[in-house]
Every structure is written in structure tokens, then in C-alpha cells.
Amino acid sequence: MFPSSSSVTTSRGGSPSTSPNKYATLDTEMDTSHPVLFSSGVGEYVCARNVLLAHAKAYHNYNDNYKASQGGKVSMVIDTLWFEPGSDSDADKDAAERLLQFGFGLYGNPIFNGDWPKLVKDRVAMRSEKEGFKQSRLPAWTQEEIDYIKGTGDFVALNHYATHMANGTSEAPIGNPSFGSDISALEWARPEWPKGNGDWFSIVPWGLRKLLVWLKDTYNDREIIITENGLSDSTGVLEDDHRVDYFRVSMEFTSP
Image (cartoon, rainbow, N blue to C red; front, side, top):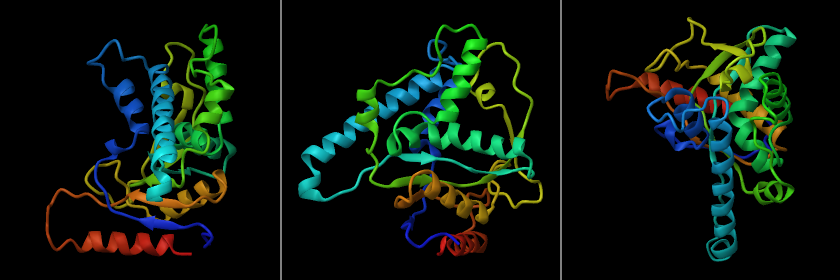
């Protein structure tokens, strides 16, 4: 059961673009219209570093100047799917963990635990060395920066919409660096799962619960607020019983 000691609040939201962790992967991995910025396997990490430093500055500004009078809480929204191992094999379990750590952990770990996730540091350093880089493509933090960012989340702010399966693959060939090669995992959605508006939008309420448990275990049972969650469709009907059912079942899976 999901422990009752973790506080979970739900809210329906819209575009995943409100999640800062999507700025890097959507812009540098997919958008080649800005060649100066297009640097897959490098730009994602530079972007993450800058976003985290900017977030920490905003957090400390509020904490130092406004919190005493307003009593508010501040965090950074992070978007992630749940990744279910495709089998009980260690390879698939490791692939699921890599997808979570390179997605949520790249931003969540510096805020809640301090520094990049060890898994991410080790993998990027290993591949960077084999690719001929003199240092890791993942920029290192100074201890001052680690201390400045750590603790700048009063709660875990989660955007979640879908669940995918994860399979381990053979290590991506060493060549041009890429964010995907650093992860080296295959993600996919089961064809029998109900879908929202888009093949990626697999409706799997139990995945939300598993994600909440992972967040609890990874970030020391912190308060969790679900800042975005919902179901898109292409019909635009007003009597959307399927959406009502989606929220009903999702609430059941997030209950203690």
C-alpha cells in the first residue's frame, strides 16, 4: 500500500511544457532549427544545470524575502512517465531505473538529495571517456553549488500522464554522443492499453501509484503534489464519461 505518511494532492493540468525538465530534451534532442543550441548529449545537461541554478536563485529569493510574511511553499515541477520493467530480468529493471533517473532524477536529485544521480554521473562519464572527451559531458557541480541547490524544494511537484514499458538493450555504439545513447533503453506502450490522444498516451492508473512509491523511496518520503494529470482526447465531447472514469480510477490508486 502507498504509505499514508506521504501527502498527495491532485490537480488537473495541461501542457507538459510547464515542466522545466522538458525544456532540455524537447529543444536540444528534437529541434534542429537552432544549430548553435543543437548539441545532443551535451545541451541537455548544460540546460539542466542552468535551469537548476535559476530555480535555486528563485527559491532563495522567495525564502529570504517573502516566506516569513506569506508562508508559501516553493518547488520545481518535474514531468515523468512511469517506466515498468518489461520483464523480471535485471536488464529490464536497470533500463527502467535509467529512464527514471535521466528523466526525473536529473532534476529531482540535485534539489532533494544534492548532486546529480550517481547512475547518471557514472554512465555519462563512462561514455564520454570512450567518445574521446577529456572530461564528462555532464558538467560537475562545485560543493558550493550543490549546497545552494539542495533543499530548494518544499515538496515534490509531479506532472504525470502515462506509463511505458522499459527494456534493456545492448549498449549503444560509441560514436556521436546523444542523450538517448547515454540511457540505452527501449521504451514502449503495450498495444492493449487504452490510449488518450496520441499513441504515447497510455492510460495505466496503476503506473501512477508505482511512481509515487518510487518518489517516496527515492526522496525520503517527502510531500508530493500532483501538479498535472489528466486525459486528452480528440473528440471534444462534453459528456466525457471516459475522463470521469480515468480520474475515479486514478484517485483510487493514489488512496492510502
